[in-house]
Length: 175
Image (cartoon, rainbow, N blue to C red; front, top):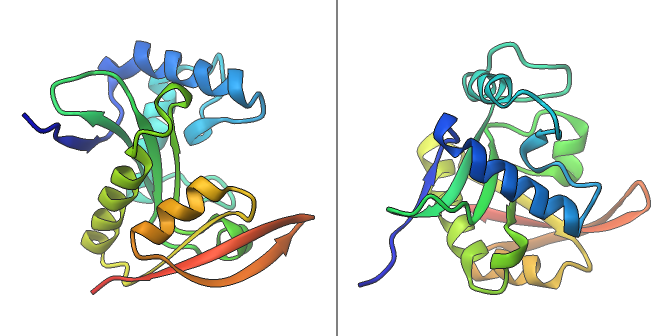
């Protein structure tokens, strides 16, 4: 039987696996904060903030409406990846290097094709939101991410240096 992958909004029942997922990310990259979660932050408060962001409510300065999802295999609680889908890119950082979609795969699950699946599902959601021109970026030296973006139809727009780091910017025309 083929696995069915789904994107779900984080919920209370995901708390324990989310914290394990988050800690796994921090071991690989201590500077990472997937979906802007901070260790020790109240999980329910974080969920509430993410729900508000998806509705464009109570946005902190510099934030735009965005929806966050977790990648799972249907019927399995293990979080394989996460994605933030920005409904617009109406600030300098997002216009330059943040883009419409930011995503990550659990370090222990990398190299299994999950990023390609996650990005494909996220692009479907962008289309449902009515975003016709999606921009996604990755650091120039992030070859796996560049391959994932290209395999989903991303066309290299340009390369940009932002605050001393080189990024590739890709466009998707959704119709």
